[in-house]
Length: 301
Image (cartoon, rainbow, N blue to C red; front, top):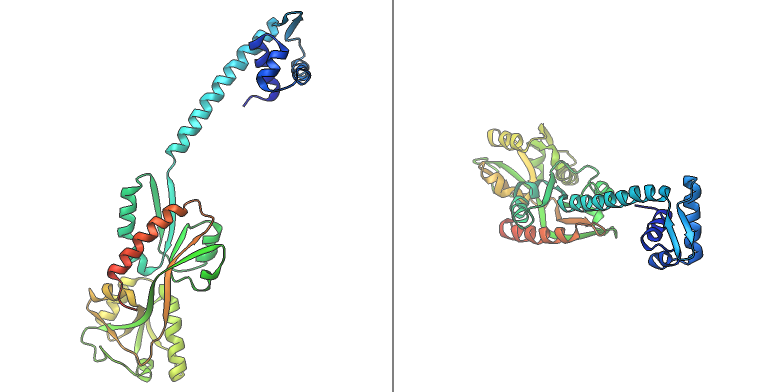
């Protein structure tokens, strides 16, 4: 953008008068004269001949005028290119999804959102919950779907509950304990498969057995792969603890729930997003679709 001195010069050159040029740019005649004088000092030359009828450009002024007009055109082109670049930029909606949402509840809503908003890019992080809320506050995510714990009370964030989940125990089809309820003492003696990414579920199972029997669960297998964990349970007598919404997924591998004498853990899941996010409107639209999907397929709490 041209500075004030150059804008003053262009106005005087166009009107042939310091007073008329001053009116054009909204300055006093004295202020206009000072700007022209400062420009002449900067270029170490006289740009205008002064006479009773006004001013006229000297050869030095004509040379400067050609370059100033060319610069004005280039700046106009730059503004147009910047505006076009902004229009072509895609919005990136960045989400962190817990296991249940990533497996079952987010892909249909995202497909619908992509049809409605073809210029929006969607990024989904389905890794285990590690510093998720702090990353949300930093701006790494626009929203977090899943269990968020005490973060729901943070005034900088907005929380919308979607589904109350509970911790469930699964075993292979034909396991003698299918159905239950199974006493905690027997559960403490069983062999377990730990799916590491649902570590909060594992912690609650440990708390339950410690409180009931004084013993920790005996984990024989540990894996970060859900497919591997379920296959191990399907092919052995080990048990696994998972969030209740995964019952539909587990049943496809012939894994069935085992009842316990008392509920191990019930917790609220939902969507947490920054109130100050620039993508709040998109988030609300996506949230409505996720809620609809959860209502269709989520098991009763």
